[in-house]
Image (cartoon, rainbow, N blue to C red; front, side):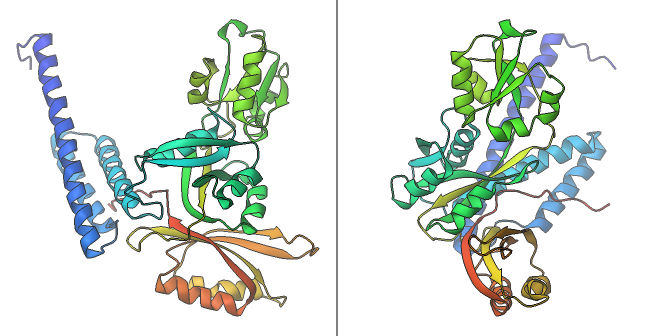
Length: 384
C-alpha cells in the first residue's frame, strides 16, 4: 500500500534508521567493554557459546516474526559475536601490553608482500604501529628476533592449498624463539600489471608459493612465461622495471601500493586459500587462561611398536582436539622422524598437563614451541 511519501522523504527515513543502527551497534560495543572488565575481575572465559546460541536463537525468532530472512539475521549476529570475541581475546593474549603503541616487526619481503599485510593486521588489532624490518629469508627473521634487533617476527607457516612450509618448521624447532600468536590471512591472488598491456602479456612474476597456488590459471595461458621472485615485493619491483607486456601475481592491496592495475581477480586454484602466519618472540609469557588457546610442540617417540598411538592416548582420553599432527625427518638420523603437533587448549590446563604426562612416557624428547591465543573463531549454530 502506497504511503504517499516522496522518494526523498523515504530516503530520509531510511537514513535515520541507518543512523539508529550505527548508534545501537556502538552502544553494544560499549557494553561489550563493560563485560570485558567484568571478566577481567572474575577470571571468566572469553566465550560463552550457550549464551551466543541463546542470543542467536532469539534474534532468529524475532526476525521471522518481522519477515527478516534468517541469513540476514544470522550473518549480522555472527559478525557481532566475532567482533566481540576478538576484542576480548586481544585483551588476554600473550602479546597483551597496554604500553605497546609501536612494534618493530621482521617479516619476509617488503611493502605489499603478504607477510607485510599480515604483520600490519596483527598489530592493528592491538592499536600498535608496525616499525617494519623486511628480511630476505626466514633465517634472517628468526635471527633478528633472537638477537633482539626487533620485537617480533611474522612468518607464514602453512597454507590451505600448498600445506606446511617445512623450512619454517625446521628453523623453529632449533630456534630460541617461541610462537606467541597466530593470524589467518585470506589470500586472493590477482593478476596485476599495466592495463595498456592487456592482450599482449607474455610473462608473469611471482613468489614461488604464489605461482604454485595459481597453476591452473597459468597453465590455461601458455603464452605466460613464469619468472620466480624472492617475494611478492620483488615481483612487483621487477614489474615496475619491465614494460607493459609483463604482469605479476599479487594481492589487491599490493597492486594499489605499487600503482598497478588489477587485470584479473580470483586467479588462485582454490577459493578458500588461507595462509596461517605465526608471530614469534623472545618472551615465553602465555595468554591468560580465559582465552581459547593453542599449544604447539615437537616430540620424538621411542623406537617401539605402537609408540606413537600410545603417546597420543592421553589427548584422546581427555577430549583434547589435535589440530595438527605431521612428521618431519630428523637431520643426521636417516629414516627417523620427529612429530609436530598443535592441540586446542592452554598448556597450563589440567587436561593438557595430564595428556602431556602420558606423552612423556612414550617419547625421548618434547619441545614446547608455544602457547598462544587461537586466531580462528568457529561460529555457533542453532539446532533446529
